[in-house]
Amino acid sequence: MAELLGTVSSPPSHMSPASRGWFPRTESSLFASEMDQFVEPNSTKLVVVMCGLPARGKSYISKKIRRYMNWMGVRCEVFNVGNYRRQHVTGTQDHTFFDQKNESNNKLRTQLAMDVLEELIKWLQTGGGHVAIHDATNTTRARRAQILERISHEPNINVLFVESICRKDDILAQNIALKLQSPDYKETPPEQALEDFKARLASYEEVYEGLDENADRDISYIQLIDIGQRVIANSIHGYLPSQIAFYLMNYHISPRRIWLTRHGESTDNVLGRIGGDAGLSDRGFDFSEELRDFMLSPKGSQRFSVWSSCLVRAVQTVGPIISTCKKMGDKSPLLKVHRIRALNELYAGSCEGMTYRQIQTLLPDEFQAREKNKLHYRYPNGGESYVDLIERLKPIIIELERETSDVLLVAHNAVVRTIIGYFTDTPSEQLPFLEVPLHQLICLTPTPFGCNIDHIFLNTQSESSLEEDDI
Image (tube, rainbow, N blue to C red; front, side, top):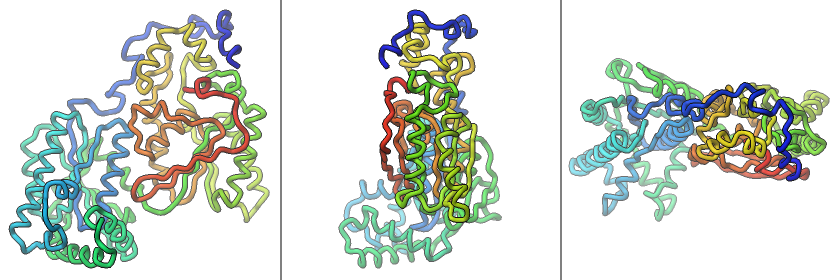
């Protein structure tokens, strides 16, 4: 294999730069920029102000927004007032600390919230941030007005309120159970913690003032009712608020698993070539059958959909699953099959069909540019970068968030890396370096605290190395 990959002294004519229509490359064509991510360093910033009673999932929502924004290339951070309180306030902080009739404690809690607001404003204005989330209850109209008034003195900062409302007892019970795992109750017996939290909750309910379509008609806000079962959006303007609103319209907390894998080994993988539309090798076909056997076994999913790219190697990989399920009739666990062009591999432009050894020899400037900045490097003559791929995969992420049943997604190296990066909150700079070997099945299980990830190796092993089939 190494011998084959090293044979570049006499490349075929179709591999030569001249025959592929090469043209001089500028910095802007070599690398995707922040402009390609729709956010400029000096553009308008956004403060997302969470509001709602305790145990309504505000921190969960905040973390999901942060994860999606950062994955998109929009620098976002959560500023949690509860964490700040625990760091800066000594003494007892049981339910009596949250007594709304205690003026001194009220003033202290308000000061803590405003101190956190100052921190996030500083981060937006001098720390390079784009979106900052003020994660707190902010349950009164007076508190929200105070926040608006303070931000009004800052240039180029807009405000979006996000209120979480839970009216269903079962959802609220789940949220309270999660809340009792917070640091506030780390050393408290469960029954005592529950009693204390209910007392805290009752104190907030006495003064709670939700967002109102009449009183708050002039401000931008989103109301999420019962974990997204109903969404109300008011006065949403601009790119970032619109992205957040659309994202929140599709989230839920239903348990499900997302199975990810690359296609089976292709004939181009064997030769070390990138891109292209080759079919499977013999080992690739063996893997497709093992994937079918696993997914239809008790270890797989009882009900699932199949998503694949439109490239031959991915379609052939899911072929045995589809054909077997058709024969099963009503007993088939297969819900739907989708071939999705957005799941195609990152397009390597004029480098399609070449090996990296050939690129290094024939196009050393391109090879070095990619080594310099793999996230933003864009392949020549209409090729893509990882930044371009993230933009292409945004609808896929939204659909995966919307899905309530299991999904088997069969795609390609860069695509699987980018999807895993979203669910595991991996910094974008690290996406191009995530290891996703051929013939490995990855199971993602979203949880309230993030995402569990399991790696399953099936029997058939590919002979392609990570270096050879990297993209």
